[in-house]
Image (cartoon, rainbow, N blue to C red; front, side):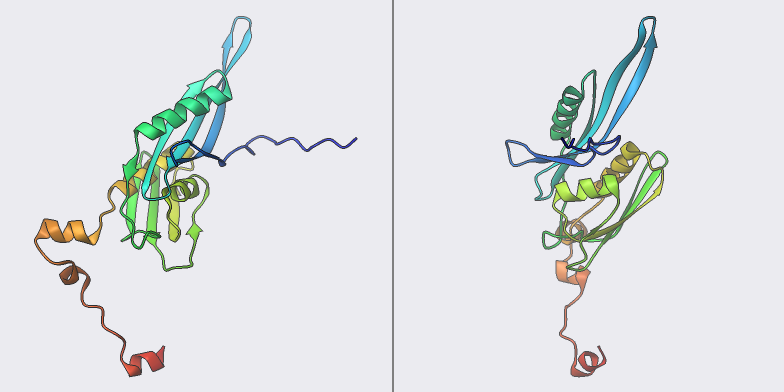
Length: 192
């Protein structure tokens, strides 16, 4: 009689679920904490969840409870309430490179050409997958705490802008900001 291998500690991270209203949620981390009382230890769980619609909206939330499912439910509800909209270029990457900081955590997010994929670690990858970014390069600097990494990523994403809003704010045309896109000459094409 073969037993199924049990999942070890930390294996349940990045669990995906589809919510009822086209939202995808990912469990980024779960932490067990113990409070020592007269009769022994009391365990509680803290969950960090990222929720997104894969079309440019994403949010995160943390929840604490005595049971894991209740902590995840609380975190998911909080994540749905704190969703932000992020402008994306061609629906697959960021418009520009951006940095974000929170506490000791710092992240650098860079736009990437088509076909690059998501080059990012743990908590950052969960944010990008639920956001719907297909091509992005990210580097986490400083703290490796999942909470700080996610909050630094959201700080960076909140600074993202699109060329249309920048042009409108500055009273210019989008083509003035981006420059004319000219076809490469025959000599440049041969050199490439």
